[in-house]
Image (cartoon, rainbow, N blue to C red):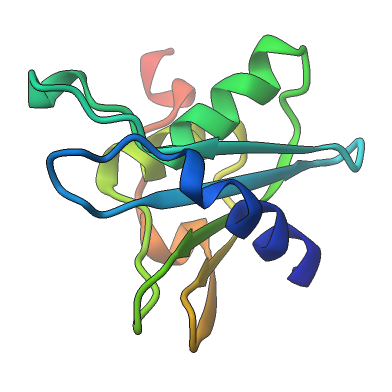
Amino acid sequence: MDELVEAAKAVLNNAYAPYSKFKVAAAVKTRSGKVYTGVNVENASYGLTVCAERVAIFKAVSEGDRDIEVVAVYVDADEPVAPCGACRQVIAEFNPNALVVMASRNKVKTARLSELLPMAFTGERLR
């Protein structure tokens, strides 16, 4: 887990957050052992903003790596933050029981995605 938090922390300054001033970085580890990073990218049209977690996951998927095992989120703040609802849903698409590591300057919390998003909407509901 420490390596994943450090990978996220290393890219934090790449975040583009001119409006909220709240930079977020993420690192995703897949079953292959590969790590993909992402940062939040804001937009003046707020609805077009993309969270760090989704950037990292989409990078993994675009490389053909879909077996998400762990998602780490890092913020340079006193308290960790959990992924937003949209990010939780995207994580659930690839692993509804993924480990989620939420880290800040001073604390680290972990939870299974199934704890953060009980009764997730999944592809089985579409059948």
